[in-house]
Length: 257
Ligand code: PTJ
Image (cartoon, rainbow, N blue to C red; front, side, top):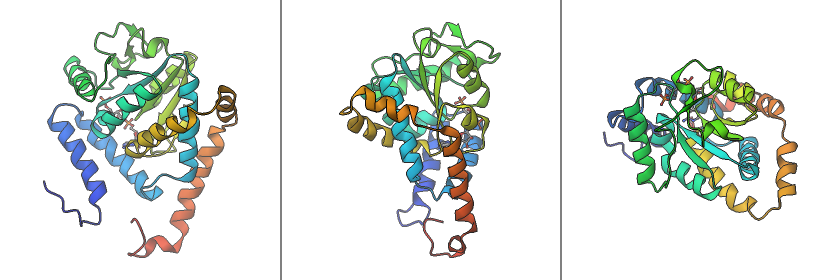
């Protein structure tokens, strides 16, 4: 469907179109459309923009990726449909490996997603011949690659489910989650949570790499060590509730609702 640029919800509708297109191409699972709806609702409450504190979370997360020995970006259907090109860009800049890891795993969808990532310039995509399992995760999402998620010290997981996040943490890994829901189990379990839309978070992180590459490792350590994830999540909830309580949001000319 053609969406006119003048539509007040243009950007949000275009994101939906990308997902619907991904679904038609066999990249996005049908329940991915539902998951997106939940994400959208939270994005609406955030004002559909990156909070200043979330931009800081993205900076700290990028520092952690730069410090890692074997960083891996784990992608699923929604992530590739919405920010696949940017994930490849980020993986090259860090540099980090990229692995397809699906909740509703089918070898066919893994293959298709890997193909799309390669068309965006990824030289190596892990996950197709995954031979290991994340310990304590009795689910296809536990299938992972030995050189990738299995041996990673830091994993970036946009649109994660709580179970796997917990399992990865139990394996001693540091997990960076991108989740619009600050109340989810993933958000509360991750080492660093980014409460932002993947369509904004990943490009922001790409920009942070350029800036942080000029810093020495000590400064990157300072950033990571100084981060308090629980305090951050509390502040995100504060911002949401302040925004809802403000009588501004009820006015029709108020941006961006
Ligand atoms: O491609 P697959 O098979 O791996 O399927 C992936 C889905 C998304 C279906 C699967 O991981 C799932 O069911 O996810 P959940 O448990 O519904 O969690 C998705 C979380 O991501 C929710 O907390 C949403 O708020 C959040 N979310 C949805 N869209 C976005 C998002 N977070 C950031 N950016 C988004 N665009």
